[in-house]
Image 1 (cartoon, rainbow, N blue to C red):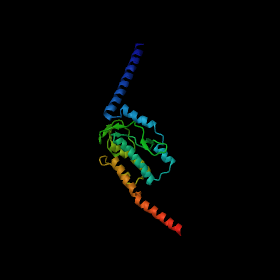
Image 2: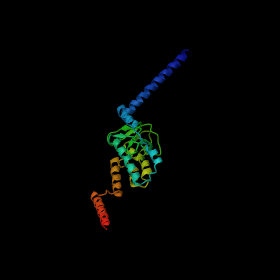
Image 3: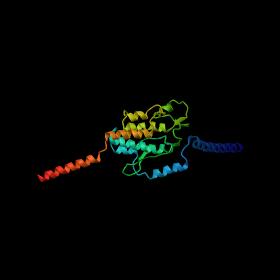
Image 4: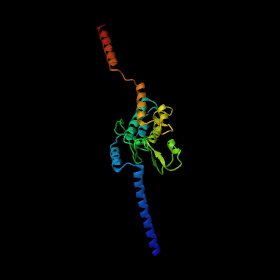
Length: 231
């Protein structure tokens, strides 16, 4: 009986120590890895509840969007603007993929990012190393150079993650896709520069129509129709 009580007591101590270690681990993550605090996480959770549209992956399944088309480029521009909204707040999402972009409206026009379970806070262009991250084929090059379990996350790693979405929307051989795949995180394109690049590209394929030329065209048409009426 004494042995039994001793074993039970040891199990209780072990369980208690395990809980303490678990609590300390979470605290360490919040301190060292700068996970979003409860207030920030709650803010994003509340915003996610209001989303009424499709995820980007479902949207692309239901609607055929040709890679490299104007429509696809405008869609990727929305992706970039959603990421910029986070990066401007010094938040690194760490899990950017088609499923984690959702439209907030039923018309599927406003794109937002969801699922902030892995998001962290950084200072500007700071890199935060996180332990226990599994290796995947989608890891940025800076991860593969490191043999330890600790991986350096930054805004640059978020940008590298966007390349898979760029493959679907822009195509693998587009220059912007190549800039996202830059193996050097220090010189990899930033989200603001990517937005400017794509906006300029859209301007070139969609030149703005001058109001004066439209007015002159409409007036010349009305004059010709009037002359035709006189005849």
